[in-house]
Structures are given as C-alpha cells and as structure tokens.
Image 1 (tube, rainbow, N blue to C red):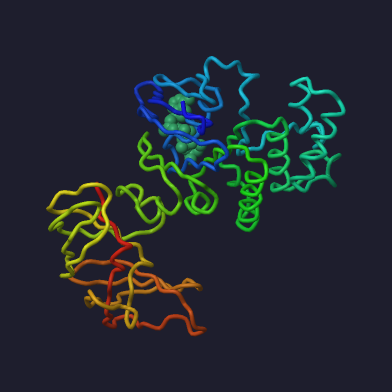
Image 2 (image 1 turned 30 degrees about the horizontal axis):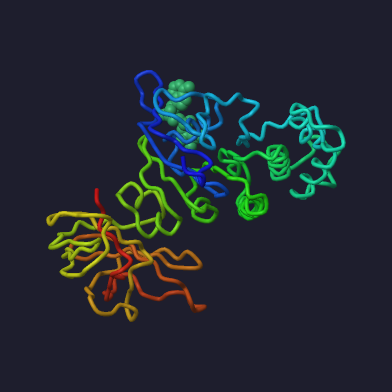
Length: 357
Ligand SMILES: Nc1ncnc2c1ncn2[C@@H]1O[C@H](COP(=O)(O)OP(=O)(O)OP(=O)(O)O)[C@@H](O)[C@H]1O
Ligand SMILES: [Mg+2]
C-alpha cells in the first residue's frame, strides 16, 4: 500500500445476476485529490461509489481504505461520507440539527458540536439560515447544507454522487467553484461522480473514464481530453472527428500516417500502433481553416455551419468525407466563411491522435 493513496481498488468485479456491471477494475485514489469517475449512464458509477462507501461488497477483488480492507473496517470507523444526488436531508430537522446529527451519533460533546456546526454552516454560507428547515430552502441551498453535514465529522474521504445534477445551469457552475474550493480548503479527498464531461474537466485533479464496466482511461483532465487512448474516451469526452488513416511507420509514441486527404504527417500515438489502417481523432478546434491553415493543407467544401455565439461550427466535406471544425468568433461580425465555398484546411499536427482501438 502506497501511503499517498486514500483508496485502492484492486481487481473489483460486481455482477447483478448474469450482468457484469464492473469487470475486474483496479485504480488508486490519492490523498487530498479531487478524483472524478466519469462515464455514461449505466456504466457502473453509482455501483462503484456504493462499494467505496461500504454499502455493498464486490463479488471479487478488494477495496483498501488507507491500506485496510474496507470489509474489515466497522462502518462507524470508516471515515467516508456520501453526498447523494437527492441530498437526503432530514425534513423535520432544522439545518443546524441536520448538520449536528452525525456528530451526536459519534458522541461528540455539546460545545464541540455547537462550534463545528457553526463553522460548517459558515463555510457553506448558510449561517443566516441555521434555524430553517430544508423545505424552506432552494435546491442550491439544500445542496450546501448536505455538504456541510457530510463534511462536519471530518471524513477522510467524501463521496459525491452527481451532486449538481438537480441544479440549474448558472447555479451548477457557481457550485462547481464552491466545491472545488471546499476540497482545497479542507484537504479532504473528494470522489466525485458525474456523467457531465465538462464538469469533470473543470473540477478534477484526475479523472477515471468508465465505460463498459471498465476504466477506459485514468489521467489529468488535459491527458483525458488531449491524449485519449481509445475511441470510447475520444468520443465520450468532448467532440471529435474520427478519420480512417493509414499508418506508414510507428515508433516511440509517434506515427507517420497518410490521411484520406493526401496529407502525410507525423503525429502522436498512445503506445505502439501497427502499420496499416487505423483511426485518427481530430478535435474540431484543432483544425485550421482558410487564412489560418498552413503547411500540410488540403481543400474542403463548407457544406453547413452553426453560429454558436462564441464560435462557429463548420461542417466540411473533402473526398467524400465529412468532418467538423470550429473557429472562434474573434470579431464582432463573427466568422464569415460562406457555405458552399472552398476552404484551405490543415490539422494541427501535434494535437491530433492515432487511436489504439
Ligand atoms: N441492484 C441492482 N440490480 C440489478 N442491476 C443493477 C442494480 N444496480 C445497478 N444495476 C445495473 O448496473 C449497471 C450500473 O448501474 P449504476 O447505477 O452503477 O450506473 P450509473 O453509472 O450510476 O448510471 P447513472 O449515470 O444513470 O446514475 C446498470 O446497467 C444497472 O441497471
Ligand atoms: Mg448513478
């Protein structure tokens, strides 16, 4: 066991009948990190989180909490708390009583509880509402109280299951920053579950992308977005174009490829790829158009465009292949490449990726 790890998941499988929800997955969550499990609906995020909380046991494998097998740690000694999507506040109790509840169960003395409750409500900016009941609060305020309650007993690990999904867009964005700051200030390890890739990229130190019952990739937000290891990750996180290409030669994480547009270029690859046909992932913003395209260019026809305010999305076609490129609208007029025109195109060579599968 590495001292730097809060949690180690070792070969964990979970079946429901014949359905394998999680297929022997392994990864570590470090102390004091904001760790996110990201994946599509039904990929097993909640199942995994419930096992980390000790609510459910794996069929195979072990979960180590600070080096101890979770099943050997009695529930009241597991310093792991959960914030649920539904908040699960006690409706008949005031906010103060909600936050104090867990501390009373732990046998803290009255003055210590009073201090801690005051401190926690202040931390989430809810001190003025201490005597209210949950029904008298907005969704965002309830979320804050749920956080205060979960953090009050000073857990080592806080598990959060899609805690922002019930909030509207503006509030969700504000709460992202609050959550991030709360994690930094307390130094508590946060394990955050979401299917929202933007949330994951914005908030996390590291992200585990889950799909098909497996960890598809684990890395920093930049690694996940810029260096996806496979088609699943490239597709799920952000938007991308997949282009079938031919690998001419490959070594040391680089490959020389030929695209169907006639370009020959040397681009990054994860691990080893064999010469032959492969898939290239090219994100829309890594494509230069018109006067911005230089070097290894080819011509494409603009077959459609979507004005998105901050940027414009172009749908292009070349050699019978469609792809999308985005361009920042830097001037007031926005972007002005007309539909049906022919434009010069180039892929930002160092920012595209040959995928392993
Ligand atoms: N108690 C159960 N019995 C049978 N199948 C279950 C059970 N719990 C979960 N599953 C199945 O396991 C899979 C993973 O479920 P889980 O709730 O972990 O998904 P999730 O990633 O949290 O999805 P969402 O984003 O929709 O919350 C799903 O296909 C689900 O139907
Ligand atoms: Mg879930």
